[in-house]
Image (cartoon, rainbow over all chains, first blue to last red; front, top):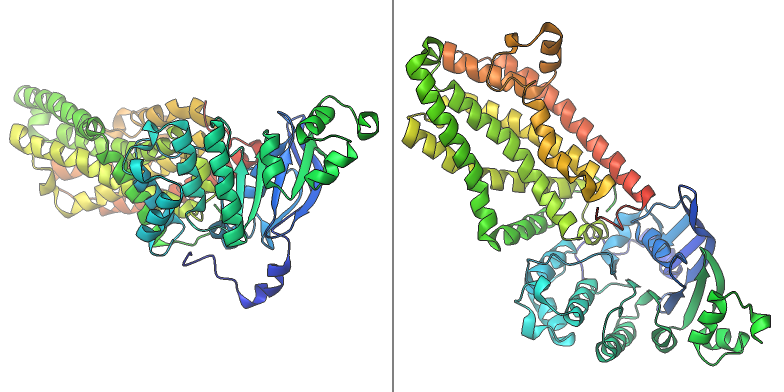
Length: 263
Length: 270
């Protein structure tokens, strides 16, 4: 989809077999507060992984370190086989993200915003790509309206369109359905599932919504106070805690009831 | 955004310029404001010059130095503002994270801000110079080729200051926004915009000569009063500007890295 940055080089053949994301002993300390404490995990390509945890668990900081927005205090991050942030230029065009911590410029129309991001990512046949996304994400009715004048649900769909503009191999989503009504949230989840299937993309999403994680994710990483508390498929984790929903597991973890006590 | 990458892709710079162009066109008050302050400046100072010229011997001989200084100061000040406001637009819009995560490199980002500073400056300064001709019979463009040297040196300084203050805002959030509006005014008395360097105490003259704009304003006075183009002053200013631009770029990268360490790119508010 992109003209530059995206083409794999012959020397990178082995990189295509590497995990989409590999995090090793990743730590972030802000002054005296440890936000992320020596976590390690690898996310295989083509999977959807959920990052769960309460407020302050370290999810957003972890995603921000993977994206290169935050410098780790120690540890290493590899994305699509490239070390971050040193080799960021090789991967930034092949990934994208959506986060509640950033907005689209509000005075620009949806079409103008998508045009600019499309150009930044050197998207081929940009007009067709925008039309395709507008059709898929149901943006057509408001594509020439200022982004700041949209409803929360419309803004989320536009943010998703921006995140998909370069047809990314890796998508990082921080609370992608926060503040959406159940219908729109369900619709977004369906779209993400279809995108993963069609593109074979890897998705890492941080969420507070347990139903969302149960429905979408092949794997769940539960974080608490900067550490990984558990890491497995949703079914295995629920079985281990003897719980029928991830929400109950989440409450067990949040309230300090360990697996044995839960059983 | 890879901090030290020197990759420059015109399509990415073009995308950012387009972004700011859309923004300018989306708001007529913003466009009008670009012309409003320079117009007020030139009218106020122009009438003052007219009055002084009629009543003081020196200014009668040095016709246009005051209006010339007003226009050149505006190039310096509005060049920096044009750069910095485009940068602030990203902070106000909470769009910095989107840009930092895109393939856009810092050098491309800064080049797009420089381009927009020229666009915004043209919108503000061209009407100002036309008013100077119509109202006060001062043709700024009659300075000829020296004007190119003056303009280049002033715009380079404005970019250097713009790059540095953008780095400060990136690192410290919008709480540091006031620096954008005020820092250039700290240079004003030292750059000797409206008076010669000799007016300053000796020790302060040393500070003044360390600033590139001082050479431009001295050069402008030499041209208008003595009808001499001081190329030596312009070359020295160019050398100082090269050092200033390099230092400001290094400071921007250091502040960007510091922002990544502090996590301030995630919370670009106050």
